[in-house]
Length: 100
Image 1 (cartoon, rainbow, N blue to C red):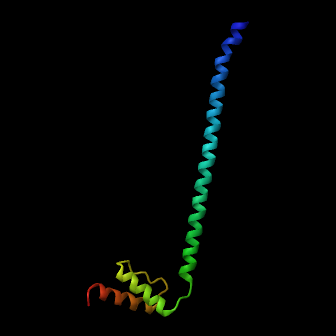
Image 2: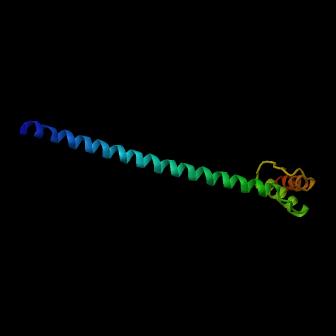
Image 3: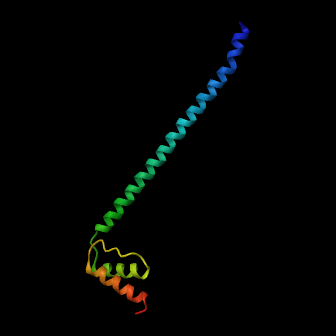
């Protein structure tokens, strides 16, 4: 009878270790999920803020300057507000970059 109980002891330790490893995996998965969700929410908030900024009304001087800076810095044409002021600024920036 004693040998039967003694032979169960190593099996119990293996089961405990396996359950501990399982719980460690569960905790790691939950933590990873929380980080991924947090990053997703932060990205979505940043996109909403960027879109709100793009919809904001700005002065003609600011649009001209934005177009000028985009061209001077070699950035792509991005007239998302569809203003002539951005166009004029971008054209001016292109001319300045070309040395004209």
